[in-house]
Length: 106
Image (cartoon, rainbow, N blue to C red):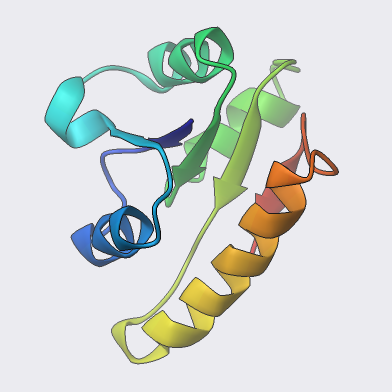
């Protein structure tokens, strides 16, 4: 399951839905929960987090949180398609299990 942080643009959520991914939107299902709670959701559901929030990097690295994968995305509106193409590549690798337990950014 892909846990979509509340700061991820609706464009990305719509794309992932259309692509058939199993997603959980924090903004729809759990608005206002903390980053740590999002990480626990991902761990409980054996999923990973897609976010645009740099705080996840600090939590994963500085606080050495284990057992949660995070994909950190940054983009501009003019680069949506390039970002989605890169996200597809990352998701393909993740779903083949080669990125479990990692922090990825593009």
